[in-house]
Image (cartoon, rainbow, N blue to C red; front, side, top):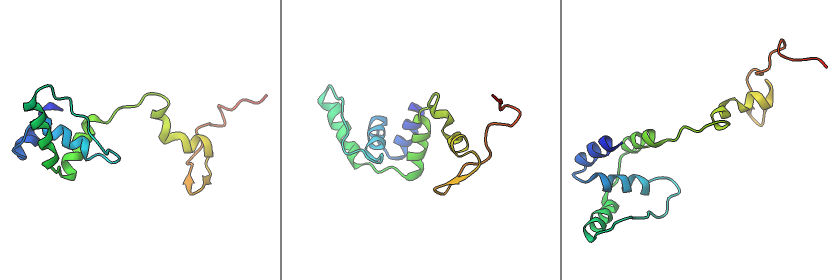
Length: 108
């Protein structure tokens, strides 16, 4: 992540801190950014991030490096339609083939 921030910073003649803050600021739904500066020089540097506009490609790259890998059950979300819809289409969402095979089904 730091290496990519540095690469993007060089392209913008900026700093990694400014690029990181600009990327946070440009995320959908973000209306403010908390700056954790301890010195006036850090505050001044951080405030210059408002002057930076990252490209769609730069944002996508940084997003790909920070996207969390969600644990169970979120990792199963792509299969939910198949589990819930059982091979049918409901509200325009195709369920795909059912995940339960007939050989796995038990008769009681």
